[in-house]
Image 1 (cartoon, rainbow, N blue to C red):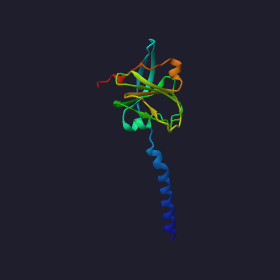
Image 2: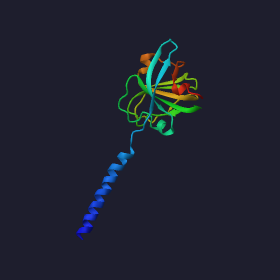
Image 3: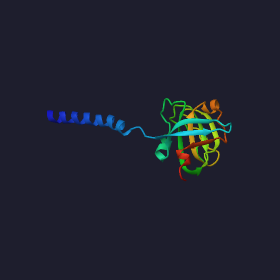
Image 4: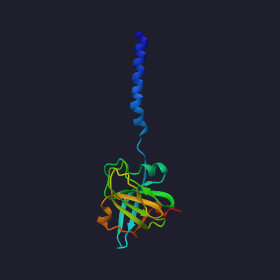
Length: 160
């Protein structure tokens, strides 16, 4: 009888361990490559950023969710592969963001400033775009980024 009780306790402890440990092991942080990104403004300024690159469906789905901080000169570029109308949202995104929607030439076609953290509201690209660049909220206004400015990076200039 005592052997059965010890076996049951051992089994329960092991089950509890796996319930706690396995989800933590499965939630390995998603990895993103990084690259320099330039924004060439119509006013003649060249702005320098280092962005993480989201090219796979899983990377685009993860994006900047759950991030608590991001350097002023950092961001993320989403590559959708081919131009299309894009819908984004801020669910599970802690940081307020500015979003730049750019076509296949890297020309910014639409800008969403100060996207609200945790919001499920759809943020529409308004036209077909191939790229979305997310930066910290306020950067667009602070640096004077406007529709018609151009983004350039290894992602936007690779063979199409």
